[in-house]
Image (cartoon, rainbow, N blue to C red; front, side, top):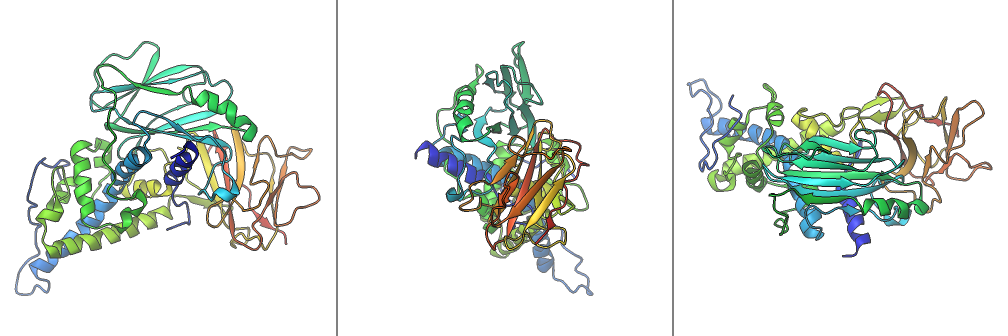
Amino acid sequence: MNSRARVSTIAALVVTPIFGFACGANTVEEGKSNAPPLASASTSATATISPQADRLKEVKQLASEAFVFGYSPLYMERQKRTLTTNLRVPLATFSHQSKLSRPEDADVLPSLDTLLSSAWLEVGMSGAFMLKLPDMGDRWFSIQMFDAYAEPIGVVSKKATGSKAQTIVITGPSFTGNIPANATQIKSTTSTVWLIGRTRVTGDADVAKASTLLKQWTLAPVAPTPAPKDFPPSPLGRPQDLKFGGPELFDELDDILKNQPPPQDVVGALVAPKYHTLADFAKIGVGPGLQPTKTLSQEELAAVSEGIKEGADEIDQALQQLATRKNGWDVDATFGQRGVDPARQAAAVLRGLQWPVSSEALVYVARVDDGDRTLSGAHDYTIHFDKAPPAKAFWSLTMYTDGATLVTGAKRALLTDQTAKKNADGSLDVLLSATAPKNDADWLPEPSGKAFMLMLRLYDPPDASWSAPVVKRTK
């Protein structure tokens, strides 16, 4: 597979649906082979539900909750194996996007202002890896790091750590070694770490310059941590297909719980009365070393499948509630917080971890106009900014079709702080139409007669109380 195809595949896998596109004890005993029975309902003469029916009801409920809890680590494990084993990208090796997307590429939600980078680490419980970056100069960059439960563990960026050449030591949760005096430590909560980087580019002519810097990003084990030699096993399925799985998903999850114990804040997010505990999940075979497909009855396995479907529906519903809408724009200003409600965490993973953490960038999404009508290429619109979007680093406004791809045939698909022309008073007027106006300086071409959406990205963002102006229909 050539580098272009590999990076395109990486970008497609990282991106998933966005807003409106939808698709007791806290530990369990390792190696337990038989799932203990659930408490059954009273068997008094007045009972209308048999103990077996009551058990199946509870199995279904626990399966629903366990799927919501397990979605994030299941997704991460499958994603790791897909982006390393399937694409033949070794662990501890960066893959960098080398070319900006084109409308004909049909990439989902491509960024036209940053290049995407990705790398996976297995630091072990007590190991460490060293990340070295060159002097990035004035170029904006950000590397977000996530643990095996898709929880953020740290950010290396122009804003967070500066642009000078730097060394970061990424350690496992039980690391006790020494950190070099000139290095910064980021401690992972699991042995798996996913690094997702973004680096600003100002167009095709700037890609080569940015790529020169990206080639100097290096990852190396800190002795005595061994260098990775083998690829992980092949994934048992695609990460995006988890919602269609059955009880076998919990066999997968049990292996993760054994090899990647959940951090305490992740376990602590299982708050009653909404959720049961991990000890309760063990009653249906969900826990380190357990295998529900070998210990539950056929009737119980059927109830597990029903519960997984309900859990998938709950995640879809949580996806619709990730953002807050104001002036027709949806924005999630909370992404990057640890230990949130498991359904919200799973929804954020379903949306895609390519989404920047809110401290690094805010993404505003518009799909409706001032009349709460779906944006359509059958109409013209204007967006009036009293002042240019208040990003401290830079901003961009990109248009996508309702399929979340770039508008086919469009000579431009975004405006940026560098290309937009302000009015004399510092305000900014953006025109959206299917046909080019006489003065097209701040114009974005619509897909003729088709629905579309807008993404306003603010890098190094202002306070989340800032609101994007309404998209006003003019024709």
